[in-house]
Length: 95
Image 1 (spheres, rainbow, N blue to C red):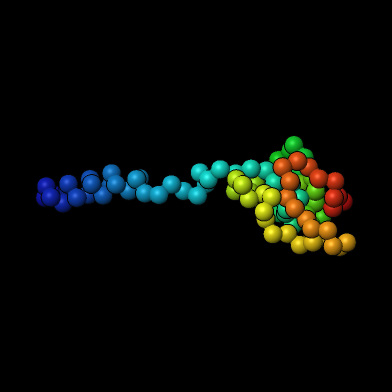
Image 2: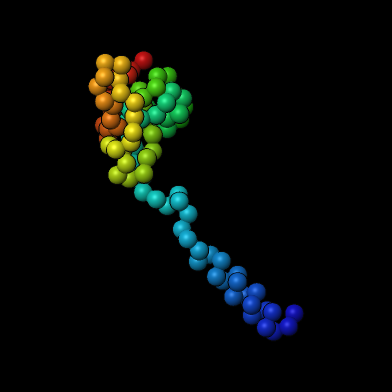
């Protein structure tokens, strides 16, 4: 391989890992009462994915981007009360 081509290949190989950080490195937090049935990441203190049996089950949590839990748009409850996410387990919408 000619020297200039070798230098270019080495430079490309070294520059590749310097790209943008993956989205997985974003800070997350547990948010209770925001997931649909079967789409949660855990219930209570346990990590048990997909075990929520009720939409927006209060004791089921989902990982959300940090700072978004309390502002996620959720449908209102049947009595018209707004639903909001919580950093602690809720007593609403339990099976």
